[in-house]
Image 1 (cartoon, one colour):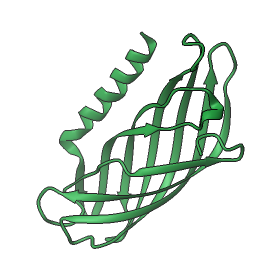
Image 2 (cartoon, helix red, strand yellow):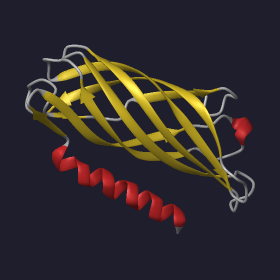
Image 3 (cartoon, rainbow, N blue to C red):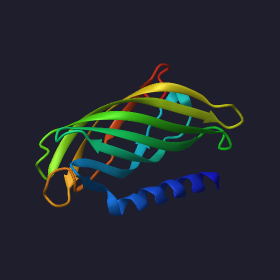
Image 4 (spheres, helix red, strand yellow):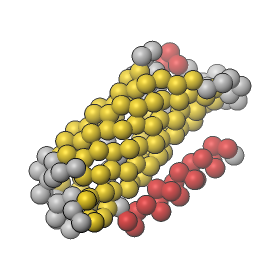
Length: 166
């Protein structure tokens, strides 16, 4: 039930952001977007791969550069013990380099830094720093540049000091 509540809350927040994905206020471009991503853990972790949901907010510094603040959450069941879970919560700040900003489809690369919080059933939480790298594309709904855009979740790889998530 807890898992359903977390997923439903995250989905509702993401859906609420859809009508106002982007705005342009006196030259300041910002965007709020839902995130839906697959999380694949290495086999040594003995936890199932799951979907990760979250929300992000971005700000366009210039036509070719943007920053994003992202929050994500996923819950993974243990392979041998379905009552033992691992919850992952990620918070990160990323810089994006956008190419062909005036096109309907604008590819980008991103690099970010943040924290990955882990919580195991029956144990206290711990946190690690993480690096993010990704590629993706901004797709304009109107054919104009950045202010009217939708954002598919970019593929991201996560690395931390002990290799979690890599």
